[in-house]
Image 1 (cartoon, rainbow, N blue to C red):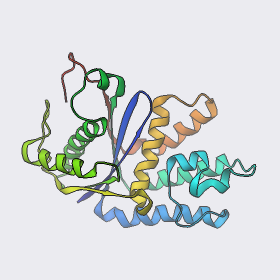
Image 2 (image 1 turned 135 degrees about the vertical axis):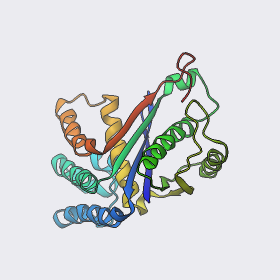
Image 3 (image 1 turned 30 degrees about the horizontal axis):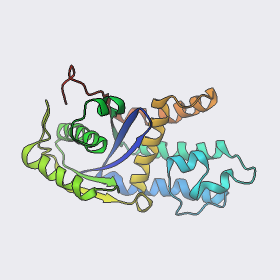
Length: 243
């Protein structure tokens, strides 16, 4: 069984989702490793041991990580160190990552009747299932809680009954039960998915004008690059058809 953790991130131009797939036997060890990353920070700074590993908060020194950026403490290197330790833990526990996106302007120009979330989630689930089937495994899907969760569970049930539609329609035979939505604050594995999604969005958007920041993000991404098994941003349009 693979546990698949999903989080989203977006900018003005593109909407992304990341799926972090972890083998059942690796779940507790990875959870403990991520706890250890926060414990290490708490041993050195006044950071709560239950602090959430949240990409935006770490980079911007907000919420649980505010002390590391307040009152003149611009502890960028220390926060990057925490981020890097978490990504290394993900890599070292043989997790796999799927990234899907959609061009938001093209989606608005060629409305499909599906929201960005629904569209990208469908494409993401198709790719997750292809990877899981290749391993002759099953997977359970857990996503960060969002508005409209009941609708997404209903769509998921329809996919399993009649298929996802499009050129590579799938009934997602390797995905069991339903989509479970949970608060990231309560799940180190959802936090791990968030760290990857946030970092990927920063790199994909090219929003970091500072070369030092760009190099730091590229270094962080190098830790999870070996985990990446699929990456695509879809641009809908009449000449492309649908996936």
